[in-house]
Amino acid sequence: MTAKLTFCGGTGTVTGANFLLDLDGVKILVDCGLVQGDESADNINRSAFPYDPKTIDFLLVTHAHTDHIGRIGKLVKEGFAGQIWSNPETKDLSALLLEDAVKLLDQEARHKGILPLYEAKDVTQAFSLWQTVPYHTKRELKNGINIFLKDAGHVLGSSMIEISYNNRKIVFTGDLGNSPSLLLKDTEDITDANYIVMESVYGDRNHAPKEERKKKLKKVIEETIKYKRTLIIPAFSLERTQMMIYEMNEIFESGEIKTQVPVFIDSPLATKITQVYKAYPQDFNPAVQKDISSGDNIFAFPRLKFTVQTQESMSIHSMPNPKIIMAGSGMSSGGRVVAHEKHYMSNPNAEILCVGYQAAGTLGRQLQDGAKVVTIYGEEKEVHAKIDSISGYSSHKDSDGLTEFVAKAAESKTLDKVFVVMGEPRSSLFLVQKIRDNLGVNAIHPEYKQEVELEF
Image (cartoon, rainbow, N blue to C red; front, top):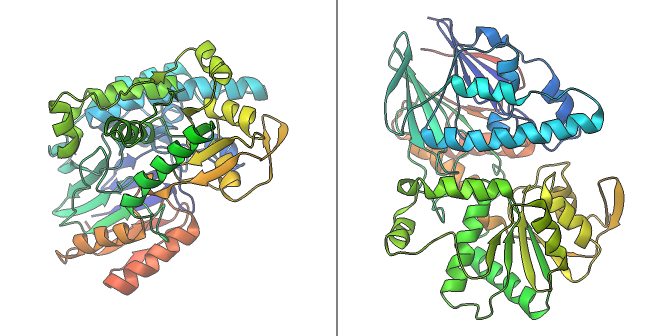
């Protein structure tokens, strides 16, 4: 039989996940995400897909981050009419993320005087095609092709998608969680795959020890209170915000910090996503489930305020210090956090704390790399605010974690090849070599549009 895998996105870059698997003429896409961060991202996102959307039978979605779902509207707009599959959690979150994406794309298009990438009607059409399957439930797509979802431990609903056919199996990892997670269950093992298509965001480096991250966050909050600072935390609306709320809840409720400080979650999207998290307590790890069963509201603590309305957001600047502002986006590439950074960037009594990956080309990456002057909304701002980072809160496995994941998968002796994608080239190539050298597993870093024949 014929089986072909084409890398239509997510190669040579962290974002834009998009993979096409052709099994005996049945065409299956895995993820359809936006390219983000790079100056050329908009041109790439607007370019034609390297396949005809009308010919695609199925789209499988690993999780709801925009770099995995952000071009679904464009796919539908250009003729896709097949089935979309994910678990219920990912569908619920995707509804919020894509609604938000439509607004942002419309704003961007109006600013540039061009048509948006897609519109609300395209997203509505996508959800008319969207079906769900829970974790650990086998589902036949067509002609004996089956899918099975395992928990990736990355964000709520994140899935590794196993596709089985003719007693052979390929696994698409999506993004793999930095287990053990503060909130979620551990990444499950893959034990009998023939092929793995895996992420490599942190393929060439390891995170700070997890016991250090809470200690550093506590110290940053203590200094914010002591020196009456404004602390700005750019945080992704999905997972990172919920993780940081939970960590702060633990710090304040334990009495480790006696003085309460106002914490503003300045993101309508994060507010809605937090409600979805509350609806799926079964996805949390045992420790969090125990907290919930004991009556702890894990996403609430004194002086925590979710600011939804624009006027509420603007009024934060007039609030006295000390205060903490958490807002999206996590890479400072848009959203309310940019307005706060513009306001406080030149203030030496402010601090910007990066708690996630900062893609090349983003404002967050410029700050992390030590830029002394940055441009925000066309205005140059000198950087006098303190810039700091905590890497331990990443939702991605680090280099050792990724290697251990492959090692476990290789124990069954069924693993033929690992395709390392979704990382900057140096990260992906480092991980490829590490897998080859340490595990003796055949690993490659495919190029954009590369086609690979598979044995099925």
